[in-house]
Length: 193
Image (cartoon, rainbow, N blue to C red; front, side):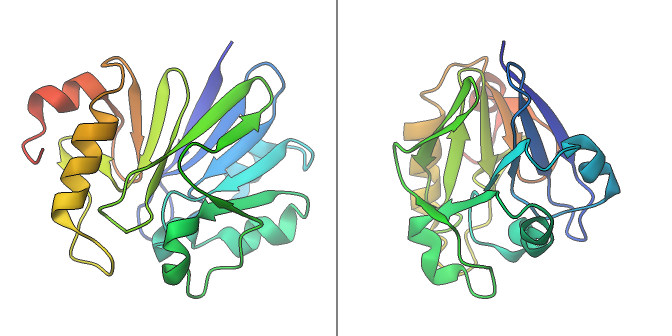
């Protein structure tokens, strides 16, 4: 057992909104709710299945549709990185603030929070045994921008080298934009790290 990952790169910003489903229970979480549409409603199917809205960092393209989810799914737990609180601006107040080492339990699946600052000061990733959701920290053959508020190049590179590149090379990377990849592939070919 594990999770099923569905990617919706359909928002106005081209951001990847992920729905992950715990295969054992059917419980779901949305990672980076930048898009909401009929296709996602069909994927979720039942209000009782959606347990979490999870934010990797506080940039508008990643929380663009959070109001729509909160209006539709009143029992969902919206969780965001604590260290990005100063950047939340017009985002609704999260129910839960996340930090390094926190565990999100989704049925039989645990998502561990690791802090990966650099793209933003509070950026986080969500890690299972086989997958990592990196937001805008690491992309396929690229990395996140650091020229926006609270971004820092040296911090980003350190986060990738010391946190992400220490993970299993077969781990699948689901980034905030673009195609998926693996840790091993990025270690071999990513020219930015």
